[in-house]
Amino acid sequence: MKKFFVFILIFMFIGCSSEEEIIPMEKVTDSGKNFSIEDFKKIGFKENKEYEVKELPSAISAYFGFIKNDLGEPEDYEIRFYSTHGDSVKSGTKYADNVSGENGCISKDCALWNEGLKDRIQMHDLGTLHPKYMSYLINNNIILFCPGYDEDEALLKCSSIIKKLNSE
Image 1 (cartoon, rainbow, N blue to C red):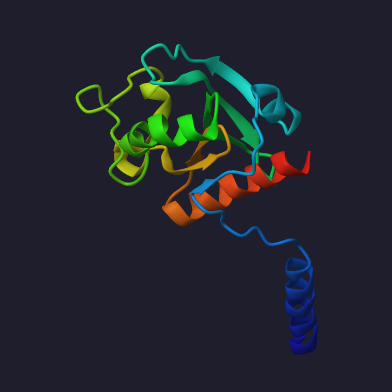
Image 2 (image 1 turned 45 degrees about the vertical axis):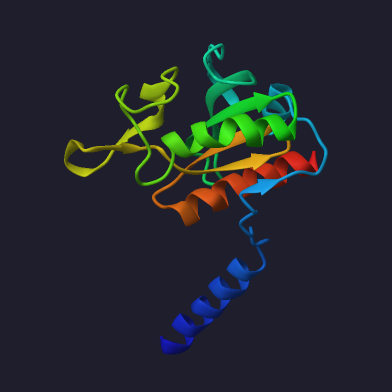
């Protein structure tokens, strides 16, 4: 029985190690591409809402929706589009920092941009409300908000999405 158990463990280790590992990206990157919502739809993004962006400086559009993970479960993402990478960094960083991370604002009292605020909230144990997006990536002309239990998990999820985008 011990040999069988050891065989199973070795098989699982080999099987898991053959999968391609996702390495977290830098938080801000620019390869000169300009993405559109159509690029995200090609990799499985299902749009739930398009937000009104007139109160979001320099943004040209913003969307809330989901992409199914490797287990087939939907995970929520928010994507903000800008004309250029420079606009996404210069005008978007302050607004992205405001709603993401452990201390991300999830109330109208502190949010810099209230559109879609309720979509950025998740409920944890005992009914406590927390920010849904633990981090974000600024990649080219977009800001992609990353769901997760902590910043590391969130960055891995967004890095996986950006890798899919770049392989299209």
